[in-house]
Image (cartoon, rainbow, N blue to C red):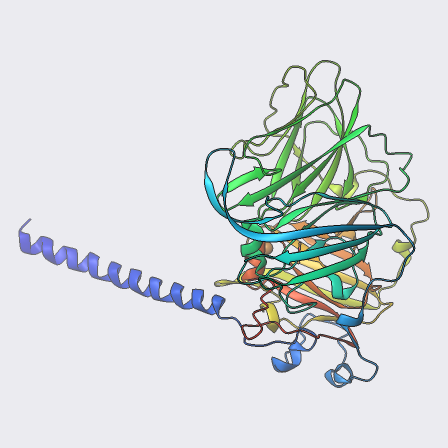
Length: 499
Ligand code: C2O
Ligand code: CU
């Protein structure tokens, strides 16, 4: 081949290639910009109006805008606070600080800490306690908030920047007050620029101990295992090593697994059969023994496992090998790691409640949410964030929500201020224990029917708990009629709940 021919050939192949690369780069920066382009100012109680009248495709029983815009008898979210109670009060202080944090593997990361650590301190209270937490911001410029994930707090205490409060700037503080009505495993995290601040460390565990233990609760000890993604490191209770839980043979250990990262973690349990006794802080009814079953825990979810320490040997609870953050329980010899296994499904786990009244309800409202993506944004019903019309309900409504995952990976569907009941998966009604969640892991192609009672008036975020997806638009509102937003989301106020 002559040099000329070769040169010609290069041009024929090279030029189009360069053009394709350039166009690709231009397009992706354009969409990246679009994604970063945040609105100036939005009222999350009325955003579907300021965004122009949107069509209500997929949203049945939507009230007319006129009715909704009437402010007669309106109540501000800020005025919805915790009721007086004579219960005991528990007070805490949390202080957010920017730090260069040295991990126990020697790596240094740029982190945000609460009281000097990430995760922040585990807050432990008793069911019924009045919990008062003062959040201080030392020096985190964008401001911070704390959201009480899974706790049904009054609207003004939900910790969502631009919806229920303004972001807490350096030098400022904000005091949260709520009643810990339900015992269980919960967690807390910032809801200002959540995809950034949670992965930098602004989170912690919140355990509500029951006032009186259920008869079925045979645990003799317990341990919290909080998994988090800090920058590029996976941590378990703040450590890059595993967790050793002491336990004598025959002891029943309640293991509270919390996934605060963005990805689903699949757990293997080796060495003993076990039970899943609670999901998202809600006990399951007569949970059966499991063995060799893998437990997939979606982002934001919590699973409580009840594990009996075997006579000779340890139990090892481990995520994927790549994560290598095992939890060992007991002190005997290590069990064999089991490869594979069946995925846990709650559809037929445990037993139904006798006289389950929820199964008789006739919903007043029905919403249909399709989680997916178009091009570079994550969407719900084809729209993203403030362009998605809110689900609007009235206090007392019985609400049915159909959620389908139409692609783009796992979408852990999270709803603020409420606990929902999972009624069916892919058209099949749940046959086992009732399942109450605040975060539902949905896999591609799955459809779930959820039921909830509109019993907590306010303005509530609904979003994917892969917070990166939320920041790309998979975030919307469940609003009660007549509740107004005292704060604004947008670049003007600097309140960016899910950036
Ligand atoms: Cu755990 Cu809106 O979040
Ligand atoms: Cu998602």
